[in-house]
Amino acid sequence: MIGPEFPQVLSAAARGDEEAFGRLWHDLQPRVLRYFAVVSAAAAEDLASETWLGVVRGIERFRGSEPAFRAWVFTIARHVALDWRRRAAHRPTEDLAADGLLEQVAPDDPAAAAVEGFSTRAALGLVATLPADQAEAVVLRVVAGLEVDRVAAIMGKRPGTVRVLTHRGLRRLAERLGDDARIRRVV
Amino acid sequence: MGPDDAFSAEMRRLPLDPDTDPLALDDETVERLLAGELSPEQAPPGYAEVAELLAAATAAPTRGELAGQAAVLAELRAVTSTRRAPAHARRAARPPRRRWAGAAAVALVGALVTGGVAVAASGGLPEPVREAARSILSSDGDARPAAPSQPGPAPSLVPPGPAGATTAGAEGPRATGSTHPRSGPAGTGPLGEQEKKGLCRAFLASQDKTTGKMDATAFARLARAAGGESRIPAYCEGHQPGDAKPKDQEEPPDSQGQGQSGSPPGSGGGQGQGEPQTTRPSSR
View 1 (cartoon, chains in turn green, red):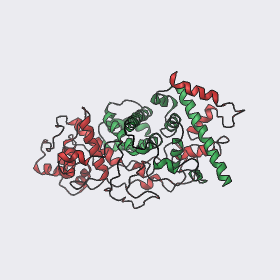
View 2 (cartoon, one colour):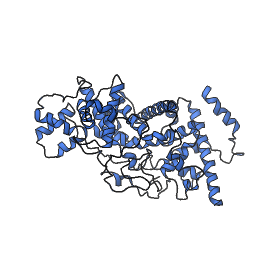
View 3 (cartoon, chains in turn green, yellow):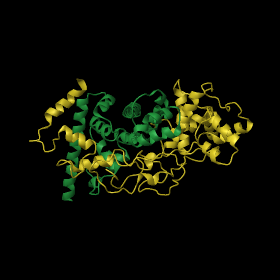
View 4 (spheres, one colour):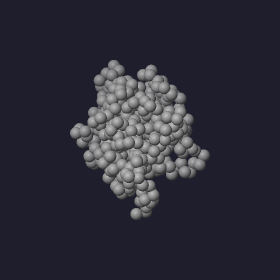
């Protein structure tokens, strides 16, 4: 979070002030990358760059609070992800989900949930194994740090639906991790 | 109704009643889990590892995740200067003419585009020349040096919860702060990977969007690196966002000399996740 200085930082960034823009980037880029790691991991880095290109082009016209700005950035990110999926649909030879990230954190791999805890990458990989809507709702709530209503607006769903999706997602993760724990005890 | 029907069906199918479902959660508990307010110890039965997972998902940024700032700022520079100088011909490779920017300054343009301003600002050039360079690069004369700024990183992506895990991560955010490698050699030499990426993206955007324009100096820089204007498309091939591509190996080695496990130094995080973080989140 930028905090109380946000309005000044935003307007400076909109004028092209690199330090100010850098602060916005610094705050949100890790979240944007992690969002893409969940929703389209195979191209997360490129899609994050494309998202920032959209931010650069549109920031001059953006008006709003810091939470609104964050929601705006993730709205762009989501469009970028959808575009990418559409393009990818026309490139049948490319693997969409079978990338290294997911392979590394196959949920039945006890090492993915070692006693010492998760790596960020493993955690995101596990979230990515959820049904797509649940995964996106969870990552927008948790990683993007957005309120239910904003997530609902971004995903084009009702707030109640987003609540159900996140609840379902957490529950599924609990089931899966519980299975892992049992596996560990057996092994 | 449409998209919601499936979930309603799922809700009916899966028990939510705490009496029959040991993993049922009330809304408040869900919110507290999502907000990171419940440590694994405080989490409801069956959710300790979920709490741990969510904490890991919001752990402090890794160095790899913060590696691409130079490219974004290059885009910002290109867009901003274009906006300020709309008269620039979109494909103009000639140096822009401005006020008192004399021949010497014009000759410097090639060396000072994007990443090179910092060199000008600190590298012993006479003040008028520095001013000229800044003026050319950003028409209103108050441009800042192009060195990526490094505001103090947040310790974590979310505010620390009241009972967060306290295991210190080895990857403290500040440990990575001040030494982010510049994207590559500045000036007329080959473009660094990040700079190339930024310029190519700006170029490609200027090609297929009617609103897109590319800063003339940035274009000239790109043309020089590509070996001519006509070669830019080929040079930039693979930088179309979303295209699968082999990672370019030109990127300078990670100047921090602390390659993380499992990731070659300077790879920029091929999977977009940067370095794998092998420790617990530092401040949840």
